[in-house]
Image (cartoon, rainbow, N blue to C red; front, side):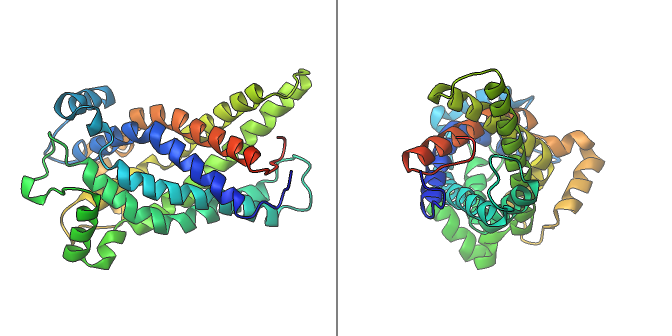
Length: 305
């Protein structure tokens, strides 16, 4: 199989993004609603993620859990394609010669952070639309006159009312979240994958499709948990920045988090942790397994495969 895969890394990443949205979007909707309504001085207060999910299902049905999924599919497909493609190609350039399957953090960390920084410019507008759609459910405090009929209407009204820069509200916070988060995700993924393969090899297991899928599930799932545990406060700040109607509201994530801490303590900065962690494992496991399987089908050789 060829190693210099070119565009094929981006195709495999595209498939990974689709798998991630299908698996994880309902959990993301719950997370966004908790972050929006449970951090406000007044508004709907959910007891926990399960209570929030039950309210959504009762008032809107299953479709309520996939509110905003259209923009999420578009954004995540392009984002995942770019982040996996850029990561794979940049890591190949930064590696100190053939690595023979060995971990090279000096290539992994900057490649992942660079990919995250690039995709943040694409992800920010799609996430703004997604978040604004998600917070306007049947039990939302968003006035009926301010609600959107769909993702396109949301994007157009945002540009009309706030200008072209309005669609990029929260861009700096998104860049911080994606750069740091992807560095944590890919580092954890590569580390867990490397050591699982070493143990399986040492235990004389023969390589098989089932074992590769199992390794992909564990490494991707644990990578997702590590990533979101690290960046959730930034994600809380981003949600508030992107869904607050006031144009002059601060866009400084650290100022927002300081305000939340003063009002709700450190716990307030981790609003939505439950559904986020529950989502992180299956969504990222699905993404990694789909990425690795797609890579194999396309003839891409990843180390240790």
